[in-house]
Amino acid sequence: MPIILSPPPAAVSSAQALSLVTVFDYEYDPSGNPLVDARVGVTLQANQTTNVAPLTNLDTRTMYVLTDRNGFWSISLVPNVLISPANTVYSVQTPVRSFDIQITAAVGPYQASSLSVTTPATLPVGTTTLNNPLSVTGLLTASGGLSVTGAVTFPAASIPLADISPTPATDSLAVHLAGAESITGIKTFSANPVFNTASIPIADVTPLPATDSLAVHLAGAETITGAKTFNANPVFNAAAIPEASLAQTHAWGTLGYAQITSTFATNGAQTDVTGLAVTVTVGTGRRIRVTGYATSFTGNQTNDAVLFSIYEGATELQRSQASENNIGQLNSCMPVVLLTPSAGTHTYKLSMIRIGTGTAMNLNAATVAPAFIHVEDIGV
Image (tube, rainbow, N blue to C red):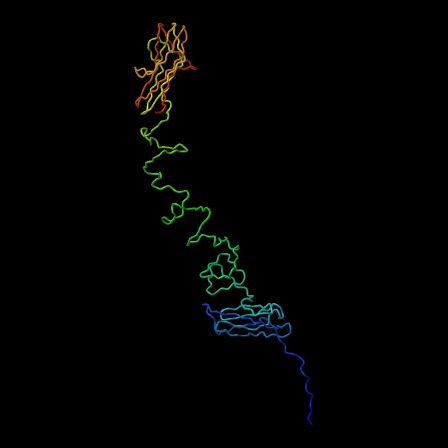
């Protein structure tokens, strides 16, 4: 007789469900073309690992997926943050690269490259050429300089202007190579700028320059008209301006001077005073003044007089007279004459003669009271 068993009780459990996240990426060959139908392997690098909750043993065998026509692949993985022991990683192997990833959050999806925990190999010292596309996440430091051939693309506004050294000028405030632009303020050039021919109208230059044909130049013979006033004395080369070319109206000053400081004695006859003659050179068209002077004369007869005269050769040019009422000293004499002699050398002298019955006439002179003759140019 068959034994009939009671049916098992109804199941009261549910299937264990693991928390999975999607991990994806794209694969390219060295020329930048997508890898199509390429096998990508992902391996959990740990032994005897379990899912924390629910507690489940995890398989560490390699899982494979294939890329599509865009080089895209994806796979579902347990986040490492939910795996025990801690700090496990997944190894990703593709035909062109291999790297480790660590999933630290249970949200996803994540691009595998962004989860990489593989420390990149140090490039050899010297020049290293990278032929494949290079994607950098985080800070790139190039201590020895970075030379890039081709375009470098940065995210929009990814580099603040303040972080660029030296700080570049704001584009709208810079002068550009082409186009019409207005420049304000004074600009100082370290070298002379080069302008196109007639690019700056002369009317726009301040201060307005002189017309070249009307300006005095540093070299060459030129004729200057009109009166020119200098705020400092000009310097001329020696004998650069012939005297005959000068229309000088000012006085040239002293041409000659002679004096005596002791008494000159005579017997009263016409006598040239020794020491009171001077030879001068007179310019063309010049006016001169000849002055003779004696402080006093002394005679030996009442009512005598003396004539004190300026001569050129035997020609008397001017005279001055002093009289004596009593025996003793006569007054001073100072003959003065203005002349316009011919250009050249002239000699002027002083001569004296007694008028009266006396037998002597002396010209008195001393250190503090010299007798002299003075010839001076006073202009034209």
